[in-house]
Image 1: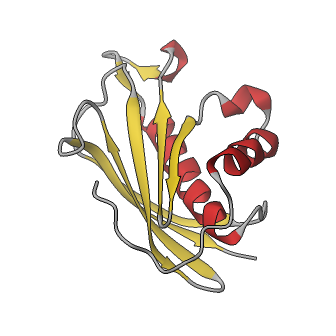
Image 2 (image 1 turned 30 degrees about the vertical axis):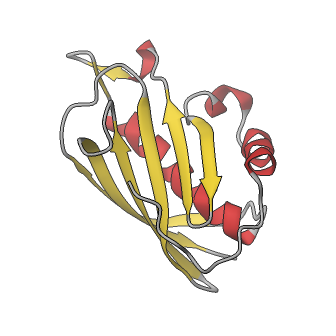
Image 3 (image 1 turned 135 degrees about the horizontal axis):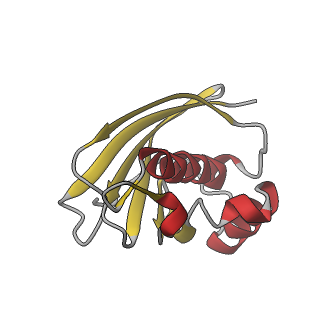
Length: 145
């Protein structure tokens, strides 16, 4: 995914955002939601190294595991721009699974499409090995407090 300029000010650095995510989610759940890789204006990249608990029959990463990564990546890019607001909540999540996610590193690129006062819309794309071979694409809406 190419970087797109975004007019919103980035309020949290990589380290601040990572610390907030680690504090906001229970330790047992946090490992299931991926690691923060980069934070840039309008964009966050996360990565998830799936474990055996995330696999469905056939050895592919389950849809719920992928949706968890999508949701936390969308949450992260929003928080990077509005600050540490724990009560931003998912209002919509639509996902298209494009190909099987193999049991190896999954990348999530979250790009802000719109950041309003009450609603935010984020495009999240999941990929493995190459950014141009998507495994899933999602549009996520968040309600902001």
